[in-house]
Image: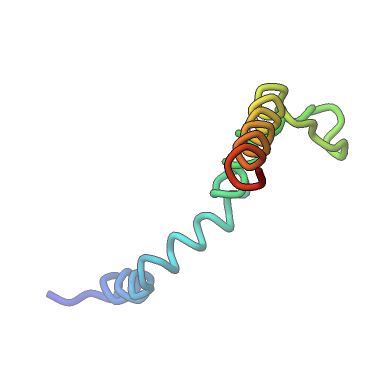
Length: 81
């Protein structure tokens, strides 16, 4: 048997799944790829100073500098010389 409530539910679910996911992620600002990458590279935010910039994690900076040095070393001995 058809009911008015069924029609309301059907209208709400007519959206494509990608739109529903996009709406969900827009409503929750702590989710998302950009936030995940920022949390991977930056120190946790200070809850008492929310406007301060977040510093890079020491491990990330050391890894990045090591990769740059290895790339420069490889380039010097294999490509430039």
